[in-house]
Length: 360
Image 1 (cartoon, helix red, strand yellow):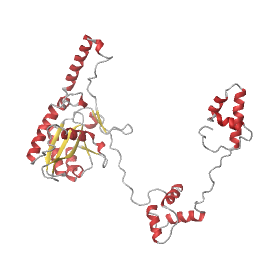
Image 2 (cartoon, rainbow, N blue to C red):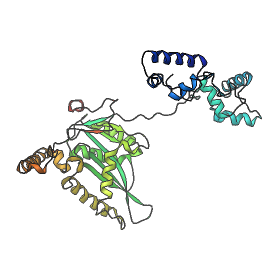
Image 3 (tube, one colour):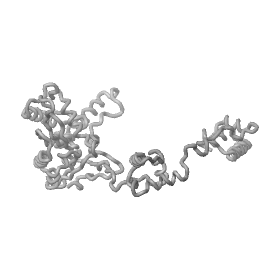
């Protein structure tokens, strides 16, 4: 009976419920508890106890709707949808085409409803819509295991003209491992950047996974061939899903919100933009106290210096707590370095870059 509120209950079920409740009451159970057990309101039970109370006075919904298709129309709809002319078309196309011939059987929604009931609402064309799955989760336990890269627009003083900044970042240390600026987006420019970054970081084949979005420079033939030659494992975001590449997006936000970024004046020439980016990368890698890294610089994280720095901070806090414990809560601030960093974490999927052994 539970969950039957608002529904029509048959006479037999109401009679059995009344009999059960009366039996429970004879055994000392309160009426309210017996009703609660069956999921029946106490007022409903009292109404059923009245003379002729078991007969439901409500009018149920009509059994047959007046606009229901006849069996002939139903069969005509199915035979039309499965005919050679329309078997590969959706109802949104079938109905207008029939109307062009002066025929109307039913609306699009009725076609969909009947095809669904007959389990014929599968994709009705030989081609299948593309399915874009979430990229596999990537885990970095140390520097130079998972990199991320992207391209952003750099505004110039000429309206509609931009420079294109290419940047690669290590997601574990947040260090910018490679960058360049060009007047166009191309797979060749990206390939040169990847080759130089791997050379600077002394990357070995099968050592890193390089994640990016689905742009033409990222998936171009030159870039793919270069990555294969370098032994770099490519990883790609889903189309139009910026959250699949969060580290590069966060880096570009930091870059464009930096106090020295020329929002109003913009860049006059590529040399100006290149010079500014060079100073930004130097600041970001060597001076920027990154909040996600417990406020150490990306270079300190990349080289392992953060372990000693964070341990010293922990000792300073513990000593301060010993000197004046009443000013502290139960424990000092957590200065332990983050053991690993994940890109696109998904518990249901296995990582393709789990530990160092799997990447080397």
